[in-house]
Every structure is written in C-alpha cells, then in structure tokens.
Amino acid sequence: MGRSRYRVLENQLHFLTCTIVNWIPIFSKPELAQIIIDSLKFLLASKRLALYGYVIMENHLHLIADADNLSKEIGNFKSFTARSIIDWLIENKSYHILNLLKSSKSAYKKDQKYQLWQESFHPQAILSEEMFRQKLEYIHNNPVKRGYIDDPAHWRYSSYRNYFGGEALLEIDLIDC
Image (tube, rainbow, N blue to C red):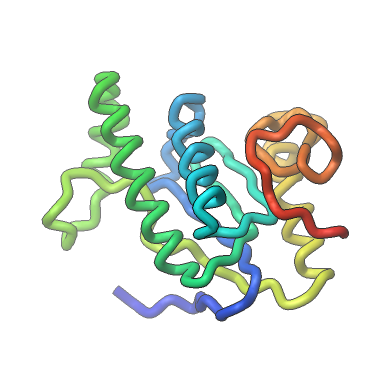
C-alpha cells in the first residue's frame, strides 16, 4: 500500500471525504444514513469532534471537521459505522449488498469478512477563510450538482440548513462566511 499524499495538520480544520467501497449506494437506505447521523451526534456530544459542515450522499460523505486527534477519531468513526451498517445489513438479509462488500474487501484484510469504507479519508487542510467557503459551498451543492435536488435546502443530510436557518439533523459549529 503506497503512502497517501493527504496529511492531517494539527489544530487545523480539514475537508474530509469518506467513500463506500466501489461507490455502492449504501446511504440510499435512510436507516443506514441514520447510523452516520447518530455516530456524528455521539462524537459531537462527547466533544471528540468539532463539525463545521457535512453532507451525506448515497455512497460517500464530506465533512469539515477538527479534533485533537482527527485521524484516530475518523478511524474510530469509520470502524464503528462499518460494524453497525454491516450488522444492519445482516439482520435485514441484504445479501446482495453484503456480497458486494465481501468481494470489495482488500485481500490482505484477513480478520474481516466485509469492507465498507475505502481506506483513506482524504484530509485536506483548510488554510484560509476563502477555502472554507469554497469547501462548504461544494458540500452544500453536492446533491444539486448530482441532479438529486434543485435547492440545497431540500437535502436533509446536509449542514446547509444549519447555516441558513432550517431544521437541521445535527447541531454543528457555525462559522460566519
């Protein structure tokens, strides 16, 4: 496995992308998107993560976040959500998706049967207010760009409503922009 060009910088906000293996549309099931929401709520409530923006799409999510040990917290988040989602898929007999996750598992991962997440989370340090605005706009317009909605306020799995006065699923840290 090669070295990633992405690095986490201490005391810096980061734009992160977590992607499902082979872009499988796991989060088209609201119950599975809720696992992500609940996990983020836990990290926020326990002050293990500061969240400034997010969007959950059908096969990936973007976050603007910070933590004392961001790599560790995102690793724990991905591990916990993978186990929870796989358990849900097994309980609900979603064999087609489970088979896709099994065939997507990296060969060297001998201790697990399935792989949900791609291995990296592509942290990009946000080095300026302009970059923060650009990444937040990208996040909020991701569902519009994909053609799912016409107005970012209509995507329930996004921080857009936090910034523009709607009813939000997560309480995040707002930055004036």
